[in-house]
Image 1 (tube, helix red, strand yellow):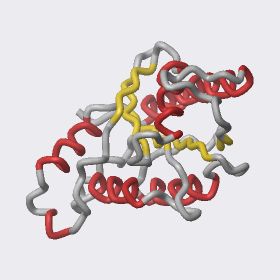
Image 2 (cartoon, rainbow, N blue to C red; image 1 turned 180 degrees about the vertical axis):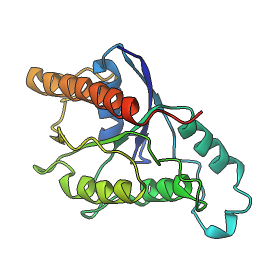
Image 3 (cartoon, rainbow, N blue to C red; image 1 turned 120 degrees about the horizontal axis):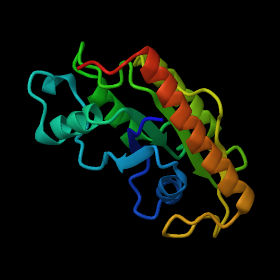
Amino acid sequence: MNTYKVGYFVGSLAKGSINRLLSRALVRLAPDELQLVEIPIRELPLYSYDHDADYPPAARAFKQAIAEVDAVLFITPEYNRSIPGALKNAIDWASRPWGKNSFARKPSAVIGTSPGSIGTAVAQQQLRGVLCFCNSPLMNTLEAYIQFTPGLITEDGQVTNDSTADFLRNYMRELHLFIERVLTVLPREG
């Protein structure tokens, strides 16, 4: 099997984000065939098409980071039953200007955690709609809505619940297989 570089976005800007903890767990549980690297969104200014002719350095670096990965993984909280503003802003930067959409034909997946019992389901559904519009082949199964409880994931990404660890490990295996299938049919353009 091939090795793939997966860029991941943490949808929260909070330093103590539980989704950042989830990202650490996913890095630990990923199969050897997946190399995960964070693509930070914190430094991006608010998007405006006024910048389309000349992107600021942070946005150019952001688009370059996406170009350097084989697939993307969105690890996101849910804010007011929606996508966090910072994450939507990042998607807007990456998908513009017209004709230079960084997500086109790039495999993607969505996961998230929250203290609530529906574990980011609404935000994930909205994010799937946005990624569909961005022409990003999306892993639709398996879906992953993780209810976070105190101590579920340690600061270094250790998952303390065996069934959750098994589920996340399987999620990452499925992501690897999905990326391989997509890139077999839609190879990266040179």
